[in-house]
Length: 238
Image (cartoon, rainbow, N blue to C red; front, side, top):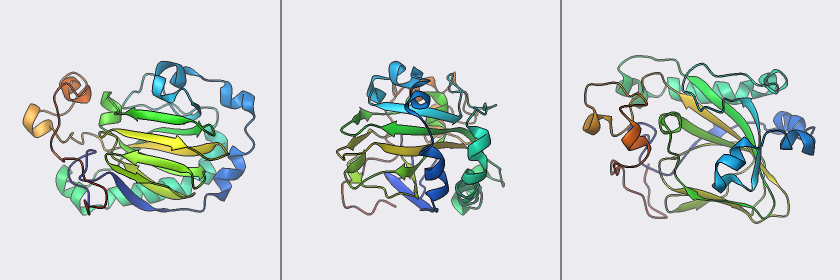
């Protein structure tokens, strides 16, 4: 199921599902002004120009330790607990990950954000290319969505339902289109295990822990990674 590291052998992993209604109720209270307060993400990354976001735990420098709790954290913390607990239990009790790290390890959420994709909008195909994103498990939970939101990773396209929890393989090319008449809102979380190695570590820096300097070439995709080739649609990759 997991393969090795964040670049697992597959495109999506369904971790489970939660009752999303408490989160939906809070999201519905946001005004357009609140959604528009921080436009850094969509201005910095052209692929996100059709989106708006609200940080809950977020840092613009995409740090890998010491996350900052944003203003929205106080109101969202109680309703996020079921999702955070499910995700933490999933990874911290996973035999494959425990075997890989060699010991029980507690992880943490380095980023938690709400991202709105406007009706008719798209996030064009891209790969995540900085140290923290390449060394995090990227998790999506649809909060508000519709049947015309299509999420593509690798060569596989799915429609995620509200409350479902998916890890996506963000080291593969991925994209989203919202062909529905309403905006889509996802809760996006990045889960970190301290010192978890990337899949290329054994080839590119054996015996040395991952860090932003030594991993830069692989994080920026200057060294092609062929650890887990993309899987054709319909194949049972995990």
